[in-house]
Image 1 (cartoon, rainbow, N blue to C red):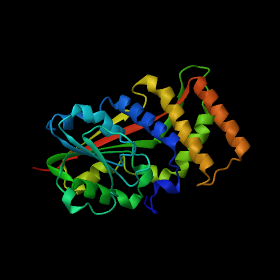
Image 2: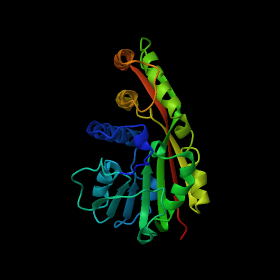
Image 3: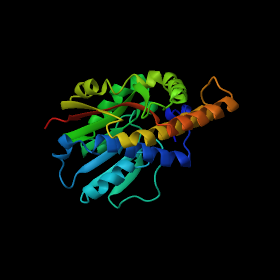
Length: 275
């Protein structure tokens, strides 16, 4: 585990976080409607070599493995703490810091490099370097696909006239305000970073986290779990004591029960390495 890992300066790596991350991944995927963007999937060979960066629980690779039974799927992360004990036979998991130069033996070896939600693990100065590093992993004609969320575009609402969401607003505003320097970049700079790295046919798609309405409640609940885990971690200063935090959390669950929710935008960016 890297001592300079940005994520761990603010968040906890717990066994409960594995379940939350898997839930978050699945809900975002449901709103997107795919794991691999159709523009990319149409070009992948049946024996595709696929890398997932910041793989965490390897959920992406586990979902994709049955689609490419002849493929070779590699997951990389800065820490192995979230790696599952069992993965499909065509999946391998390893340690890799994408901020550092890519090992020479990996350059030009993948048909697809996939990334989802690294904003909490990168500084503003890291993004262009990481995109350039990951682009070097691609074979000619290979694709980089990267999803990030614009949490700065978050808003709250309710399904019913009597729905409440003030507590949801309070804790989301606190977390997003704290991490605004991380959340202000990535979703809106990836296309330019891909072009700067020499990728072609760069594209962007924006999907609301409320595209599938049935995911709003579960995603809001998932979001509350990470908000209060962070608030109780002691890693950042918050303006609430324990009693106040307990009451705020209880009100958040009442808000969700009343039909209150939060939503945001999901940005998918992709580009291809020239032949």
